[in-house]
Length: 208
Image (cartoon, rainbow, N blue to C red):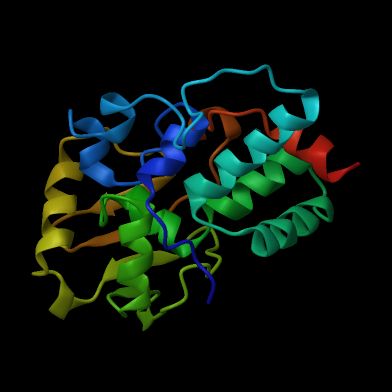
């Protein structure tokens, strides 16, 4: 299973804004985007105007990095979205948001999607009462996600859940932090997800 294993803070610096890939660290003064708000590399501080293609490419990279997917898998998601009977950008967003690792993060059982992916890989997560260890597992509306009973005392899970209690819950999921169980209520709309790029630019990039 392919995944990015390099330094994630460099990804935020490359895009020029926070992608919130390291959980609570991204909200602290230790965040690399706060300490060094320039692109990595020898010429990171230099600026240049992007072409239309360059802006489309950056939009695609941002979405891939937010959700933690690589090119081949992202391309498959795009091709699946094309076959849906709805606007392609909306369909793509729904596919990405329905990934199990993303829902575990949205429910507050992990402080980042990266941590959520690790929890799923290690078998800490149940879907409808059955263990699922595939982070890209696609959830359906009404599915119940919970942390395995023996795993509820794991410190990172407890800390993430405690922090999530203080935040406003995402309206498309319902969570009970006493039982470490949540329900995927509905697909979110694009405005609720607040993806920091125009999805239409990604569609135009792949349509060339």
